[in-house]
Length: 326
Image (cartoon, rainbow, N blue to C red; front, side, top):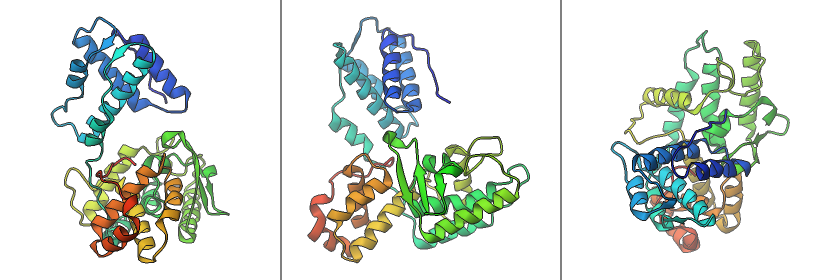
């Protein structure tokens, strides 16, 4: 369900129109709208009465709050920058946060790349998750979901939004809709994952499931990301993997998929110049920049292949650190 907000600051009309514009071109923009509502409250609190967005006020607004993660702060910076650009388009005086400032905050999280043993332990823990009459499909969903995330590199939101009609078991292909950047794509499955998906469907049908979502919530609709994150924390604890407060995260299955894929290609002597665009499309990245960061991460994690990568693909490896939301 789309979240709608009422704005009351001097830029109330512009904020509302900006949210409408973003959604009209295909963005869900719930998180962005929520951030802009907070900006609206901030502008009112600071008694802004003329239609201009001064640098001093923007700088104060994007200052990191106590206990706020860098990722959350980055979201505020990015959304505010977009709104300021919109205001300038309309002819208003608005301070646009420089792109280089955004990058300083964006590329700060170092993903946890799961080892093969860690993956095995997580999968075994998910296989033994207890059945519950209150959530009769949960143990089956957990057993498949994290294998699917690692085996395809899907974002957790993409996996949870899958409908049964999006899972083509004949050709072994997933149809991903409503993805990030408004993109749609087809994601091929391995034979083993296709077989697991087929077995999973058979078993939930045996439990009298008649809904449309592939990972159904017991309360109707599909599971949400926050619920699955709680189960994920439980599973990694059972698997003997410590959680630092910053990670591992569910999104790290996606990072692990990409890094393991690149490692395999490099060790096989494949031409990454040709293959990187395929990986970018497969992952649903907006452009090659998001995929290139995996090259740097792969080289850092596997020193034995650094020389190989630097000799052949150094021009592809970016200087910035990794962005957790790619």
